[in-house]
Image (cartoon, rainbow, N blue to C red; front, side, top):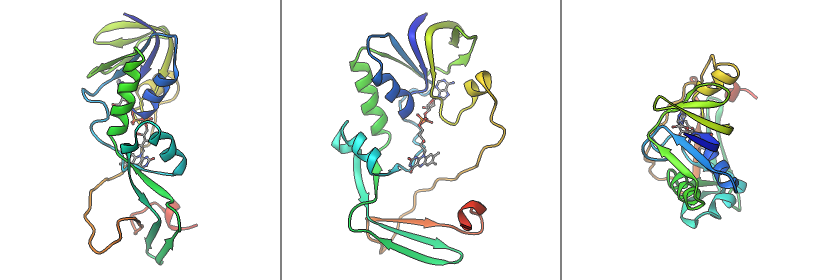
Length: 189
Ligand SMILES: Cc1cc2nc3c(=O)[nH]c(=O)nc-3n(C[C@H](O)[C@H](O)[C@H](O)COP(=O)(O)OP(=O)(O)OC[C@H]3O[C@@H](n4cnc5c(N)ncnc54)[C@H](O)[C@@H]3O)c2cc1C
């Protein structure tokens, strides 16, 4: 097996990279069977990213926010803006749209296959050696390739994502809650 450009990871970084490559044979390797799943992002982005991804499909941006409420142990701060200051990106729709664009260029996406580091010339997929001229590692927080090519990650920040229903709060509001469990970095400044 061979491809000019092998990209590890079918997240936004890997897919955007694949989109920008022309005149080369590109193969994206994604360990999950469905691109963008499991969903692992709250999808809040700033104006620049919102404008960039809205160019792919208007449906991708499905909410905007012009209020931020900070709830901190020191008190509550509410900021209101005239224009939206943050947007919500619909994921995994973002990845799905990117993937279909990538494939429409003739590039390939190998789904449901975990790549493993092999050598400086090939990566291992399903036990075979996949040769490449260029390798792009876009594995997200996963450190398999990062560990092989540079240094393994020693410490991860553990995060918890929950979906909460709010009552009596304007829909265009982001609420940031800081409590005694928040890292000190966020509490003092
Ligand atoms: C809980 C949570 C909330 C977040 N909220 C926000 C937010 O509100 N706003 C924001 O901007 N960002 C947010 N992020 C961060 C955002 O999700 C990431 O910055 C973004 O997804 C990074 O894109 P990426 O393509 O680099 O990595 P990823 O999206 O992680 O994609 C990497 C892909 O590589 C695949 N992969 C990894 N290793 C291999 C391998 N060996 N073989 C094959 N495939 C492999 C993975 O399956 C994955 O699909 C959040 C993240 C988390 C975890």
